[in-house]
Image (cartoon, rainbow, N blue to C red; front, side, top):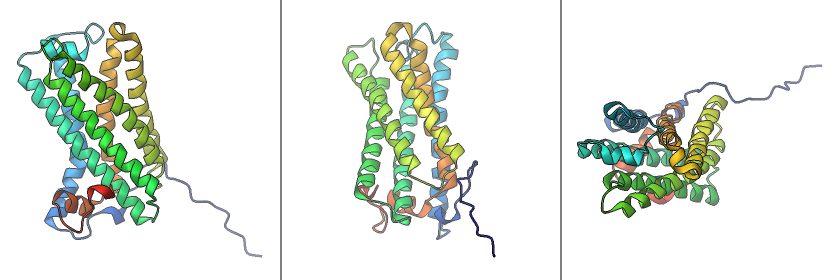
Length: 255
């Protein structure tokens, strides 16, 4: 009697590249989209982390003694910090939209794009875009200026909506099967740690400044780790069509 094959297919531990997600046309636009997709998370992460390091190094401060808001208000010249943080936030916008398109492409490819999942994907993208809009607001308006309320509003937007996006993204991530278990675990631990640090800072306030720094740094690292997801399953053609506003590409309602 022939032996029956009882082996089951398991998720790989390490990332595996998906050829089907790469550019089919091999066009110059597709290659540019590929480069943009792989570098933008690193750019966003590096700018925000670099700004935090610049604040600590140049001002010679301890993250236990001052909040990020206080450090931003004391830094001179202010325009340098605003430029770095705003550029990092805009790069995060691009990363968020690209990730949302990637999720949509995966589920259309596998005929699993039911309405609830599409809605969650869209809401998640809008949530993170608004979170980094709040990040720009808190960077532009110092906490010790006349528009302190704007700064606080931006801070609440950033920390609150970033926490929501982390939760939404974890759900969306575990609905995708092409990523390795290692990637999923890393992409779950980092945002969860960021949210936990945000909650601790909200509770301890003046006694827990370091947790604010950790929360922002981990959130930036979370965006940077998207390069793992983009490198595993790229969708260069769809991204090129979307950002070039081509008719055949996905629309904002398809995210």
